[in-house]
Image (cartoon, rainbow, N blue to C red; front, side):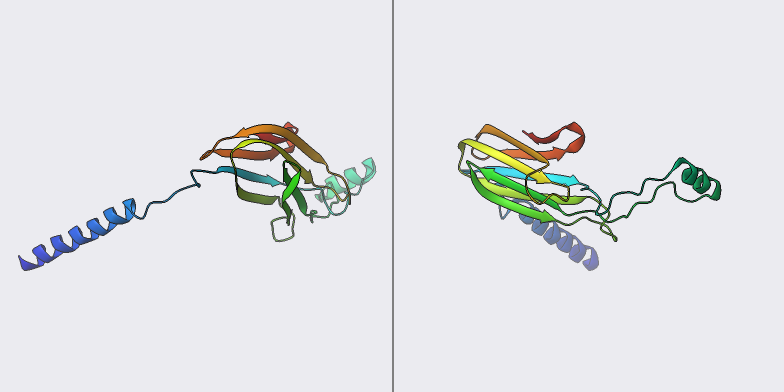
Length: 164
């Protein structure tokens, strides 16, 4: 009987601790007086070396031998992402490709807090070997509200950056 009482008391104490920790301390996802900008993307940049073009005869020979039909280096270039707010650079990221052979997409996730109001946001991305200029660039004037998130994503298939 005594074991049951001790067991009930321990369960009650555990439930009280879990209940307290689920409510306190309070957690805020963002500062309520500021707007938040989230930049989130995952993109595979161009390969370090171009694929070798095979002749139709080489393709036939490889197909018959069960060999790969293309000859490409796996490694990809790093991704360069830049973000300007009202003409001021606030973020520049050089993201390395994922994967054991640096052959996967590079991922970027950044969160910035900014004063609410009307702002001009410009996002740029370079995914090729060029040394100047950008492969993708998008700029838009947006209204940022306090306590709200503004999200910037990227998909090359749909033309580049999306602001929402």
